[in-house]
Image (cartoon, rainbow, N blue to C red; front, side, top):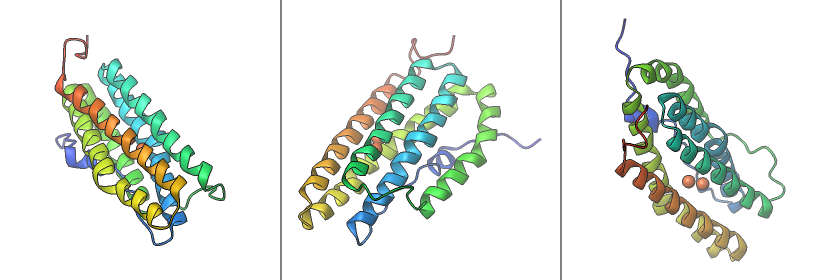
Amino acid sequence: MAAIEVTEDMIFQCFAAAEQREQRAKTAESFIDVEEYEGKVMYPEFARWAEKAGFPKLATLFRKVAGEESLHAVWLRDLYREIGVPTRGEDTQRAVDALQTIQQRCDALLALNPTSVIEKALRVALAVEEREYANIYPGFRDQAKAEQDERASRVYQKVVDSERQHAEWFRAALHEFPSASAVPV
Ligand SMILES: [Fe+2]
Ligand SMILES: [Fe+2]
């Protein structure tokens, strides 16, 4: 049987990056597509892994962040009411496929080495949040600002602050991982 392996890079493939587009309504659509994916698919899956691996506190953290990602999408939906089901971005589709591909492998690996999978998931979550608050969403904020859309610019700034907070939570969780309280019993 082939060795079961799940690398950090494989987990990172589950991350979809929102894209800044020429029209700001299209940027908002990409944002909603990605945030809803994170909130409804990616982080709930990370929470499932953490639960299965015996790290209930981390599962709670992943679920809490999932809820906030869904909320970020709601904030933008409030400003762009005409966006219904967003067009699935290429990168989001690729991420959905990557998640499905590693799902089965992950389930097997969780039984063998739960700590390693969860640590990798945490590292990826931290990298994702850092990229969003430092690189991706400030650009969205500036695009809205350049087009005198103050409300959207304020909302994107709120998102940047929230993603920074997520990064802090994941950094702290990683720092104490695997602590006595987090180690499977
Ligand atoms: Fe978010
Ligand atoms: Fe986030």
